[in-house]
Length: 332
Ligand SMILES: C[S@@+](CC[C@H](N)C(=O)[O-])C[C@H]1O[C@@H](n2cnc3c(N)ncnc32)[C@H](O)[C@@H]1O
Image (cartoon, rainbow, N blue to C red; front, side, top):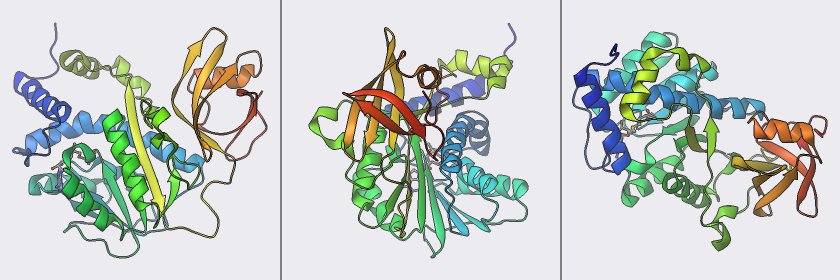
């Protein structure tokens, strides 16, 4: 059988994965070799990039883009988050990269310079000049409470924040806590459709967490290297759960008009119906969608093809129709 990864590469990938899963990655700087960062960039970071693609697609669908002209990628690692936002928003004129690992900053800067020669790119102290978008990606599990609090002090100086994390219960719950502590100074752009306290904070919703699923590009399933990567590391390549939070300084009009909800996770299928966990200004609640009430909407939600932001028409706890955001014809 052809092997697409060398034994040292597999050993390095397994070490990284174990550290991330065990939650011990925060203890100390773990980037020792430039080749490990390059390997991370081609594998784990690539998968993280697909989560960023999903987040940026949702922001585009919601007609949102940052007003800032500068970006700080904090905890940049190999720099995938910074590169994704530069590709998405060409008006961004500079990228600052910060990581406790100088090796990571050097790798991320070289790669970003190669991809975006027109953008000013530098390694940076963790400071936020005005007019800066702060991006954070997969850092929260590595930060003890005290360091997270310091990071939030920095975040308070940002104009906008786009923060993407793994879709685990623990990381998503910490992101909810971040939203609560920044709620007085920022407006929630996404995934939230409202500015009230997070509805997941009620006792009845303790088992839920705010997470979503990104799609991996279909080409990887024909790519022997990726298939071998999944097999060797025991990773289901189809599953890309993530959590995210996008904040901006409050403006005269809220980022999302009143009345819209956001679907959390994937709807659960029952006999002839879906159970949809839905977040709304009034709280988080499970709604039923019967196939016979709105077949097109049912199909779109079941296949993951509906946008997650919907204005439901609900009758006695059951969805009977919906309008996508931005407004379109009710799908029924
Ligand atoms: C899992 S990696 C994620 C890297 C990158 N943001 C991504 O999404 O691929 C976490 C990164 O956070 C960095 N990090 C952890 N604690 C940090 C701290 N206290 N200050 C700055 N960087 C930190 C690590 O060095 C590592 O590069």
